[in-house]
Image (cartoon, rainbow, N blue to C red; front, side):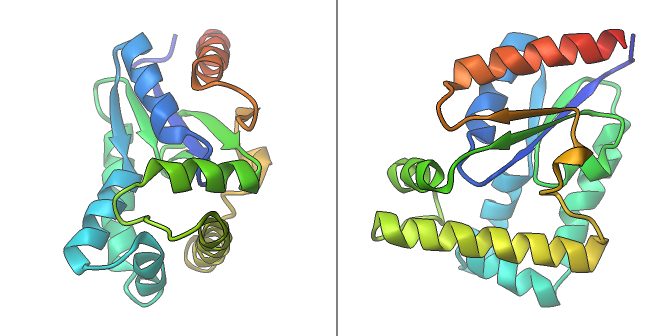
Length: 184
């Protein structure tokens, strides 16, 4: 049995990471560390959208460094945690690594209807365009800065397509996979 096991939840924009993290937290009684929330807070502090902050981070890597150092440090915490983070699989390599995929049309619908802070779009088409731009920016930025590709599914222990799956079903699949991982 692994001591103080961690789950890192990564995935496509709009795949339901945050919602599923909440369900997992409730089911497992484990605290969530969300780098997306941290990033959105930083974007608000700088008066930027999340896409603008991503672009800003290209020339200001100290923002990524601050977030990543926190995840690396928390990997050693003497408590189980859920990391809701694009890169936690890399900075918490001993975690159970999960990737959630979603069709871009469904992702745009979810994000457009969610009305997240710092991610308000005038139309579904704009949401879809910005999701694609943000993903492209993140993949390129992380390849250049860390020499890693978070979209390479071979990095993960479990991959789940959430396009036509409820958050509850996704949570159950993760719990099942996590239980098997703990026994291995």
